Amino acid sequence: MEAIEVGFISILPPIIAIILALITKEVISSLLIGIFSGTLIYSFYTGGGIIKAIQITFLFMAEKISENIFVIIFLALLGALVVTITSAGGSYAYGIWVSSKIKSKRSALVSTALLGIMIFIDDYFNCITLGTVMQPVTDKQNVSRAKLSYIVHSMAPTICILVPVSSWAASVISHIDSTGLNGMPVFILTISCNLYAILTIVMVFAVSIFNLDFGSMLKYENRGLKNNNIIVDNIVREIEDDNIIKASSKGTVYDLIIPVLSLVIISILSMLYQGGYFTKNISFSQALSSSNASLAITYGAFISLIIAFIMFIPRKLLKFKEFMDCISQGTKSMVPAFIILSLAWTIGGICKDLIGTGNFVGDLVVKSNIPVIFIPCIAFALAGALAFAIGTSWGTFGILIPIVAMICERVGSEMVVIALSAVLSGAVFGDHASPISDTAILSSTSTGCNHMEHISSQMPYAILVAVIAFLGYFILGITCNALIALPICILLLLASMFMLNRISKSKISE
Image (tube, rainbow, N blue to C red):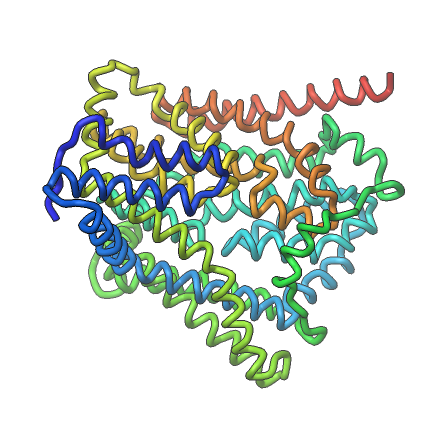
């Protein structure tokens, strides 16, 4: 199928998808309608009708899925690995071990944050494991469930978006690849510019070490466990009942650590091997850039699953049938991700390869004389608003990454990495702040915190980081240098936290 130029009509598919997502708060149907509107435009302009549009829709969807099939396989294997580790009792054993080492409230909070960094392969795995494992540990140290839920929710999406070997990275890399850029190297470059994710992690450790609470979080912390409301909404519990995993009591800490480390090490070695690092005289970064990242992490997940099988079955942590049931359950847990990714790849490809959305919007930006320095700020704000409204970062990635990449290629390639990092950063903010986010629900449920208490106490923290990140992207737009923007943002964040903590304490004392 040859690309055509249809002018301003080319922006209708993404606009329709965005508006419907904002109105319905449901990303799948919104993307489907956006896709079909794009193929209708292409069909009518090339002399076809509705039947041709339907044919193009599914042909193009199949083409995009086949191009990214290793991402689908990786996510399925990752889901299986997560469930098998949990069922074997690795997460439970780690929690018991940590409990014996922690003697203070500060160490309990810092340990929670550190464990959140370790569990970087998937946000669902992070939320469920971190909340379940650390809840009894933090209870002993009189940490409120609201604060525990905040740390769990803060660490899950932020660390997943900063690590190249994670389910989030696989999704983002596939979207970047679809724009014609080299996904893995570009993703690695976005890490230092992902201001919201980095600043959120800084805030978590500052709150944990210096006790810098403010807003309603300070009230919940002062109330402590004596009156802590741990009622979880019945509807949320019903949703999660199907996903409850019975863990073995015979697992050890190594049953968590070894499979996760195997995934990381094998994935990196696979990327280096494919890139020719061991056979050619090339650098580490050159090998990574020339490798097939999605294939490499698929190898890593598959071999890690085999290692888990070897570790768990002979020791009777899981029976063979139970292990296979875990694979089935883990794969099922990734079905929503499969659907969203497939639709996102499709609408991005239609806009780029069929109706020329990027060329039109890029020309429009150039002709409107909007300063290039504002593009990161706009991308961050738009991504944050969209992710907040629809409750998902992944759907936001699929809608905005192709558009922002195409715009930046038109107005200046030096802004591509910064603008893409702004999209990733804004999407994480929207996910973090949204009450309908899946990670928000998992965080409050796994920690036993009332869902709206979690949202209301976390919101001021998320908004503060978002405001400073927005200013940071303005600085990045001017300097194109994260080494300048990031330290300024960190200093502003810490100063604001100390000030807000002092104000909140004075109000409570009054």
